Amino acid sequence: MRHMRHMRHMRHMRHMRHLRILLAIAVVLALPGCKPAQATLALEPGFYPSAVAHDPVNDRFFVASHATGAIAIVRRDGGVAAHVRPASASGPVVQIAYDTWSRRLWALTSETLEAIEVAALPVRRTVIATAESGGGFADLAVDGISRVYLLEATTGAVVAVERGRPARIVARLPDTGSLVTGGALTLLPRTAALIAARGNALWRVDLVTAAVEPVATGAGLEGVSQLVLVASDAAAHHVVAFRGRANEIVTLRVTLDARRAFVDDGTRARYDTPLHGAFDGREVVVLLGRLRHHPSLGGDGRPNLPPRLATYSVAGAAAPRVAAAPGAAPALVR
Image 1 (cartoon, rainbow, N blue to C red):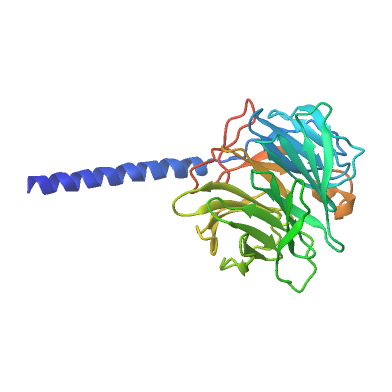
Image 2 (cartoon, rainbow, N blue to C red):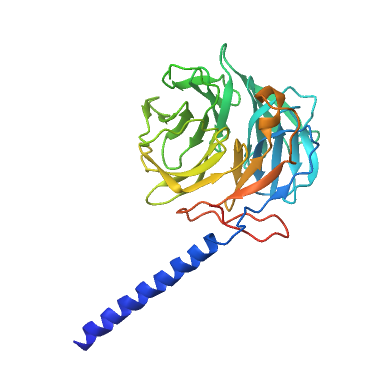
């Protein structure tokens, strides 16, 4: 009997301890003025940042321009260290990705894929692939062994590119029946599949069989501009979906077989045109480039605020902590 009372007491104590932890988290989230940590980028007003990638070895960012096609190396405090792609290069840059193993930066425009050898002096740039007739590149995913997958949003083609070999179409996403100009790709670990966003749907692409099937979400995810994998565990892949034109970011839990995705409504966060961001193994960093003000996107050509790097907190995933600009206190984002 005494043993049973002791066990009940221990369970009660554990329950109370969990309640105190949850209460502490709730108090933090309810604090007024709880804003994401931010770093202002020291870029010229006409730069219009469009894409960002992280270099984990040197803990720095590559930031690309929609207006000029330039790519700058940016420190965590927002200062510009150098440029690896000049403003005279053809642009605008749609997306970039950095391969740590090869120290190669991949730059994607709507028409070309370019490899930039950032460790070379001078920096070398080589066009690796061009979009097929009627196509327009929207996103890329790098698998870590110098293979790159590209999404042609207007045609739905998923293209594999390997250095020294001709580009090949590995799959085509179904026709949505309407004009699509954006989209996103992400590779999933421990699977031979990638997830593609096009229109208001997600698709699973089997890279072995080329089979394409819809990912069941229970709700449409229209206007996804980037998919960022932040963690994988025994239960799910945790993927951050950027919805740039909708001014929203939300976290998805994708099943291990990549056939279902659950939208975590509690992770929705609002930003100003968050088309792209980066994950460095610890932090989700959001590029706020004020692209909605660019004339080619229907803007007035006068960005009202300087570009910034902000942060996004991922609930339920064990990997990311909240990013903080130097000298700023970290804050949770809800």
